[in-house]
View (cartoon, rainbow, N blue to C red):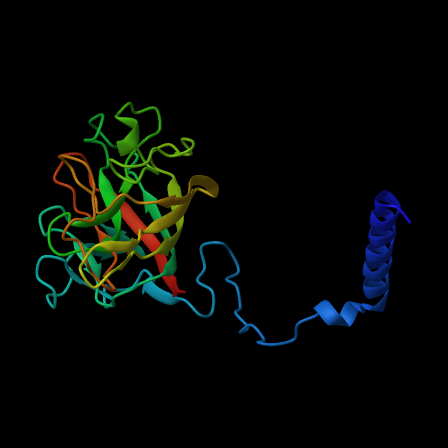
Length: 259
């Protein structure tokens, strides 16, 4: 038997062996029964919190919130008719509870009588991890972006000053809008350097606008974002009371699922 014949025989035997192994497999061999996922009851609508969610605002009170600049001080935004309206004079508010990885749902509405233009038009922000007072943290921009021109990494659906939304899914002022967010917190080495960056996926009004992007660091209004000196653990979720002079916007139906 020459070398070619020997090689052909080896190939035939290998193929035969593989076929025999496949024939011995059963469908049960690839069926897994444990661990059994927990049962979660979805809400009746996309706005409703599922059964395992923490409701951060249910239209009644701000018991889950505190002033961001003075943690422990009750949040003083305005609650009426099931709606939370920004109080620009009192400052940012943030959750009392700290979070790492989570799924977040939040609804917001630009007032129908909004005035101003560019960034001075219903400006606010959802800080996915607040890193102290002021605007420290990682900001998902809230803004009237319906026929309102501004820099594209500062429009609604942007990770402010970092990532432009994939599309502009904004509704007109006066209509309720939603963000659905999957947040993966950054991790850090012992020396403070970033081990894994923060990642975020965002749906704006049900439309994907941020697809598992890796953040460059906490938000910076001036300069490039980075993780220098940013080592942190679990953090609150913060809502911004922006200092522009346009009419304040409102929020409702805020809930979070820890992952």
